[in-house]
Amino acid sequence: MDKCLALFMLKKYAALVAISMAALMSVPASAGGQATAADQLTGKLVITGASTLAPLIGEIGKRFESLHPNVRIDVQSGGSSRGVADTRQGLADIGMVSRAMKDDERDLSAFPVARDGVCPILHQENPVQALTDEQIVEIYTGKISNWKLVGGKDAPITVVNKADGRSTLEVFLQYFKLKNVEVKAQVVIGDNEQGVKTVAGNRNAIGYVSIGTAEYDAIHGVPIKLLPIGGVAASTENVRTGVFPLSRPLHLVTRITPSGLAKAFIEYAQSKAVHDLISQQYFVPLAH
Amino acid sequence: MTSSASNTLSRWPTDRLLLWLLRGAAAIAGAIVVLIVAFLVLEALPVLRHVGVARFFTDPSWHPAEGFYNLTPMLWGTVFAMVGSVLVATPLGILSAVFCHYYAPPAVARPYRWLIELLAGIPSVVYGFWGLVVLVPLIGAIHPPGPSLLAGIVILTIMILPTIALMADASLAIVPQQYLRGAAALGLPRWATIRGVVFPAAKSGLCTGVILETGRAIGETMAILMVCGNVVQTPHSLFDPIRTLTANIALEMAYALGDHRAALFVSGLVLMGMIAALVAAADWISHGRIYG
Figure 1 (spheres, helix red, strand yellow):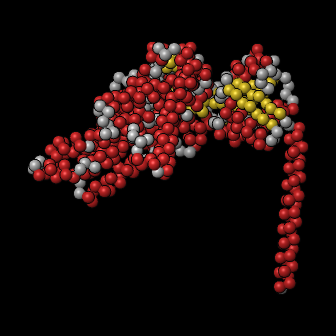
Figure 2 (spheres, helix red, strand yellow):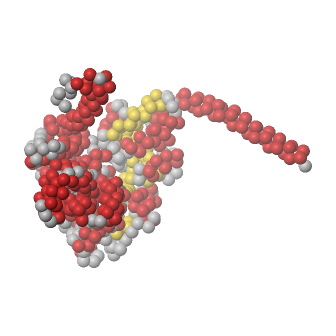
Figure 3 (cartoon, one colour):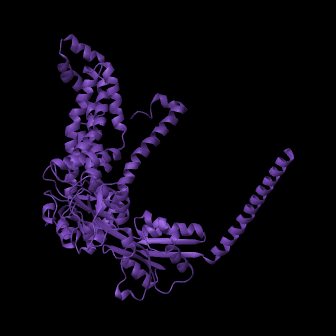
């Protein structure tokens, strides 16, 4: 019995040694493998363009750098038009463009990395189920100031707008063809969470936030309701497939068909490995 | 202080060491303010140069993305919120300290003081959150929309109350006992003693308390940002939403570029100017005897 146990122990010990040996051997092996792969990827990538995309690409760049220690990713923001101009002139290896590509930009190769969707939100107890685009424009410009006029109860509308410079504001204004000067708001907020809390605390408020945030909060019991736009339900799924109108693609663009480092980075930015980073920035990852 | 070099004490090396340590500490404390102002000016300079100072007060609105930079409504917002909260908090704080010192039995006074100290330690974002989920809906039910100058004043009052209450408490505690005994010997009633003897004796401490609470009221950001609505407009009533200069910086800094960013540094400069004016005014009113 004792002998048996000893044998068993010995076997177990041997197995352990074998496993640890294998682990020890495999570590340098894999490190070596990575080193050879990394050797092919050296140098610096300059990426410029949309300030909406810059934080996300910055995060992806950091993760890419940690995988390939000989690579430096330099991300600078300055607007989508700068991204296009810099890429055309060769000042940047990759440009960031936070909108659909225009017809006169066919000379660039565009690679979508994510989508950005914005939806109007109301308090859950607001009886209004949908608003037309014209109604939303009139509410935001102050022409409609009571819910009664759009089928709700007799109560003044609290219009919640975003602070200047936010990308959600940009998407919203662009879709409804508004200027920020024309918007007559009762509350101006900063980030998406503040918008959700403001609407959740005010039965007569209307606001708009990133769909990613709104959907997460609505599922987790926050009393808000996501309004459809043009009959399309506001959901990350509809943003992903591109049918939700109040959304835009986020692109990386290059002048020529990318190769080497630029190609590797674009493929990485489009891969599943960065979906968590995309969701963290309240964007919607694309299906693969 | 002026005679420190010729002071007999400075013969001792430890005293000389202490002197240099103190000089160093004072220099650091002074240099921080100078550096901050220099940095603000440096960052604001580009927009001041090609937009000009005047447009920050004469433009039709604050829409920095479209090139309008009027700061006046936010200046008013800051002033109204500050004045309102100081007007409410000061009597409340001083009278609560008087109660604590001269009327409350010790069994009440001690836990009461703990509570005020606890109030001073609550982070501002907690006040803001409470304001957003409790106070704002409450005000909204009385007079929509809810986020308003009134909400800001209430939150600020609660936040600065412990500052003035604790300062008043401390300055009442150091009123010399013989003053009180003298007043008692003259047969003065308690309230007359407090009004005629204690308040004049504690004046400098009370003034410092008011300056500190006003400074806190001007500088508060997070809580104000959450309850005030942040609409850039000069308020016409207590129920109108406002945006303060501090909230303006916190709201827009994260995404601001170029002139917009520099314009936010101008907001910071205006804020510094307000605080400087406040300190100068307090110094002038008390003829330089606040710290005496």
